[in-house]
Length: 232
DNA sequence: GCGACAG
DNA sequence: ATCTTGTCGC
Image (tube, rainbow, N blue to C red; front, side, top):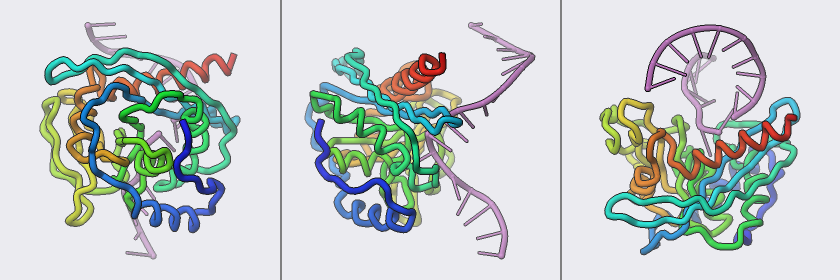
């Protein structure tokens, strides 16, 4: 797939923050996908001592059955590269973006939705990983983070499917979503070309027996497999 | 000034 | 996120 909007990745933190503030103005949280036929899950793992990242996007075909869906794994695309950018809270995209984009460029068919392990607009400048890369690649994207970057929420119910809004001051930025009963909830937010409902619904629809949705869960598993192959 | 802080 | 030994449970 092609990159719709380009910009340099090697920005210092002040420049990166300024760019996020510009991108934020162009991120659209409107869902306009009548049918979802293909979903991608994206994730990155590292070998710390080699400063090396392993990025994966797993593609799934979606078959609708009533309220739930079935996912059929189609393809796994991968990339590995040296990491130069440090982890700075709020600037994760500048660390993981280049590796993920190398994977994205190998994909031939446009997914209807991309799911990321990280924040969408639930970010101090509304420009988390899923918002930034969704905008750059001009694709619908949502963020499913395992922990909170920013925002406040009421306690969420214990049952699978329970969810409460996540707020920054008086502005909603996402939801806290219980994807498995009595298991730590996810922090779900729209990235780009997706709204709050689509983010929550597709997160729940694609979650089966683990807390993470299958697309990002498989992508994570594949990054770990790449690392174990690389090590030996 | 002091915590909080996706991965 | 990674590193890292053991432990508990299906």
